[in-house]
Image (cartoon, rainbow, N blue to C red; front, top):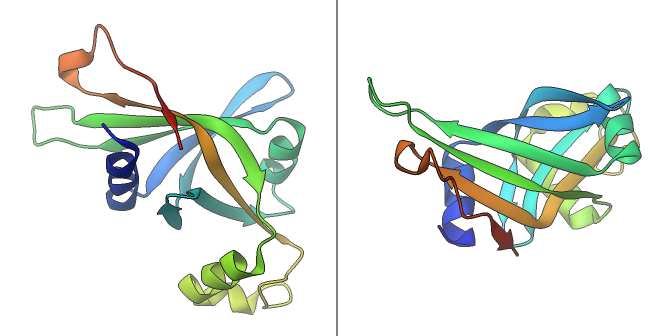
Length: 144
């Protein structure tokens, strides 16, 4: 799988399960990718949520996306691991607010709202799991 194919998979299956660490214990939650392109895989959250503090304390994350197969197949899983970067770029934040109009109703209602945190995985590695490579999953492919 190439990085372009990885991005296409994420665009088709945009909700994954993001793992962080809190007090040396794993914490997993569903997250929806709102943008996936050659600059990274983008997410957002509220500054008041524990996720923001977890990311600041330890920016290493892993997210798994599942695409179900027709029964009785189990489908495929794409895992992406990397270090997140907080995104301050106003053009990206404006794009987020254009994508999710309801964000204009919370906080300041503008892309510079200090309570909305935008972050991305800009580099790392990914792994595509299928039943066929179950015993020997891999390879882990570095990106970008």
